[in-house]
Length: 304
Image: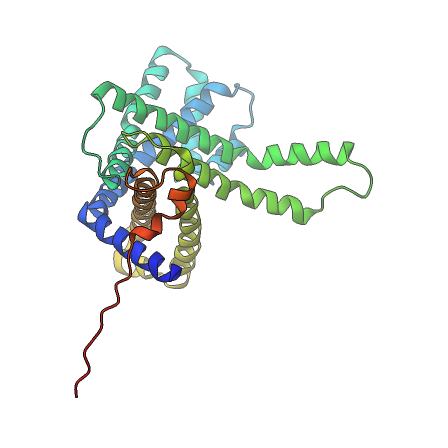
């Protein structure tokens, strides 16, 4: 019976999701994200360029950045060299312009999550723009964390090997597992932050955790499936030719946006079940939320 209610709950979520036109909001997120990725990448490169010194190993750093951002290492190296050599007011103004331009994608994400929650009342314009710009800096910080994950884990490993007792040093398998868990953990925390703070309503974090966890797991699973599909069936290169990689990237962003908004839809429904004044408030009401989905048994008369 619980499984049936979960299935009916998901059917209700999909129906409500399409009724709110969230699939079109996901398309808007994919469009703005595609055009904002390059300015965001340049903004991150500019920030790193302000931090590194003239004698830094910019070639190796450019390769590491190119592994995370969809920008060539040659362009990254040239941009960093120009920023390092001319740290002026013009460079700061260009950086702020890139931040403002790349905030369009996060504005679409904010509007999409509010649409999934069924919220039509916006915040004031200045507050919304500040939230979007804050999300840009958050995304840049996330990229920096991903860039420096391997060096940080390497330093921690060296410290552990020096101070840990003999025979209790974790093996290579443990460190490899830790490095692989970083991305899923960052994905979960990022989605949790978006679900908690972007809706223009009061949200209790305890009711956001299940939706964020489900969205993060679906995101990781969809990523593995999509990578396997693109590498096994290179249909995008056959159909779109030289822009096949760009179209594959656009499709992946759209799938990610769908998962993000559907997770927000599930979170809003769970939050409604838990805080509905006609139901029990708190944890008991939260876990009994599926009871709203009723199973009706219809008797079919038999022909004589």
